[in-house]
Length: 136
Image (cartoon, rainbow, N blue to C red; front, side, top):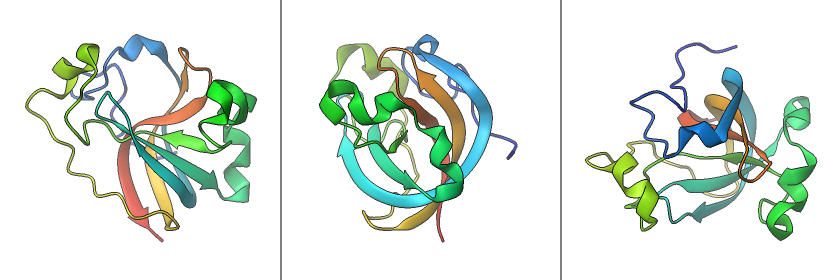
């Protein structure tokens, strides 16, 4: 376990509606290959991380099936406030903040660190908020 991750309900997490996230592990580092990067209306990115085999158990069935398979069966990784939110209820969480994390391109083999959570609104597992990313 890694220490020092920001929790979704922390005042400096910039996560909107943090009560929708159930913390499964307060801080985790995983490795895998970035499969896709999608900008979301809440200002976050959804990164699909095709996990290395030792982390495959961190995804659940919903990661593959919910919202017609939008997350491709990958672990969802969410760096927050990457863009200005257009979703009304998310605007205040990013006010005055822009995330300095640089996301490597699709195809990069990376280590990503953050809180491992269950998104109760969608049903899939995530790292949210992403704390750190390193190309390996």
